[in-house]
Amino acid sequence: MQCHETFLITSANTGLARWLPAEYEDGENQPKGWNTGRQYSGFQLPLVSCMRISSQFMKDRTETDMLVDWGQYIDHDISFTPQSSSRSAFAEGRDCLHTCSNADPCFPTPKDGKLSSNKSCLPFFRSSPACINVQTDVRPAGQRQQMNSVTSFIDASTVYGPSADLEKTLRNLSSAEGLLAVNSEYSDDSRPYLPFVSVQPSACLQEPGSEPAARVECFTAGDSRVNEILPLSVLHTLWVREHNRLAEHLTRLNPHWGSEVIYQETRKIIGALHQIITMRDYVPKIMGREAFDEYLGPYAGYNDSVNPSVSNVFATAAFRFGHVTISPRLRRLNESFQEHQRFSSLSLHQTFFSPWRLVREGGLDPVLRGLLGRPAALQNQEHLMTEELKERLLVLNIPETLDLAALNLQRGRDHGLPGYNDWRAFCGFDRVETRSDLAELVGSGVLVEKIMDVYGHPNNIDVWLGGLLERPVSGARTGPLFACLIGKQMKTLREGDRCAR
Image 1 (cartoon, helix red, strand yellow):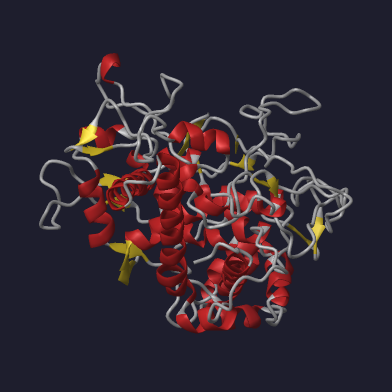
Image 2 (cartoon, rainbow, N blue to C red):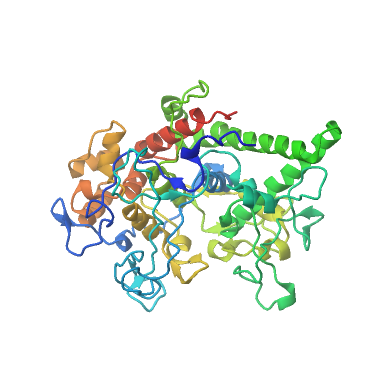
């Protein structure tokens, strides 16, 4: 399906859209916080590791963990900003894993005292810069921009990949039914798993005490992040199973169709289902119906004047609101939706890069029941992130645990995102000028004092943190700013897609 082959602006490996100009300390490349002692509105920016507020956990009364994990899954369908492929500073040659100096692409974050590390900082690799066409791009030619390495559209690239080469490896080209490839070594009670990666042994964790011959390798899918946590692996697997189920059904209905026609028609259906679930069922729940009607409204059809590229602020800040709604435990339930007798619930960090837990511990069903049968974590202004993500985040190519909240803040500065106040103005809201202004939005004087003691001035507040601090709008899981930014992005994705369903 090549509906977007002429839309180079939204192809994989193109620049993220800028809704506001980037803000760098040198105007072109250096992130805020790069130069020690630099002041903004009379204050130095706080270290990103200073943002610990509370580890309290609240349950959502109406939604389950599936809402959260669908958000992460669909985010991976529309955006992926790769980090620099270099592991050493370009000029000095320092190893980014071992230096605490800012030397591109190294932009380390100061270490929080609770994290296990012998260094005074944690490694951080800057995002790869995007190549910009200076003749056609409206962004300043000298400013660093970031890349989106997947297609911007909601098109099930998580299932089929963002490129023809990857798509080919994911298909079962020998089948007459247009099937996707599945695992040839293991099955889930006769239901297929995803295939393993071709390069083995892979980096995924293994069952403690298991023999080398019993390895469970990393899964492969349309998106390389498939193994990050078990719920992602489960959702990826479900869609491969659904593709093959539909393809076999279409074959029976249309025996005169060839395998390529069956494959492409099935892919269209899967892509449409991704769009319907996202726009009809997911987005209104996170924005609230009132904000959805304001920013999206009824679908008016394809608009060729709309640029549907994913924006930098959406990918780097607004849509990362979901990180604060991730539960600290993954529940695994039996057929009665009670705690599983054999396979107990897991701390979140035990699910990172561990496909063996699906293969060896009951398959998809216990995890699926947990996602559907237990409440999600509720966004709470005084609970920014579970300690499972602040103290135990695992990245395979970095030999220590990381802090996702600090990484989100550092990534926003790396990308030159303007501050919270600038984005409020972009959305037509009043700027925050005083502590009392902020208190009206946050609703907690104590929290406002903590934030202002750290930042010094409202103009300095990072957009990711500022958006999270706002009280959610009616019937939503985001405040007014993130509802605006998410709504504007979803509208462009819908109206700028000529294949939208």
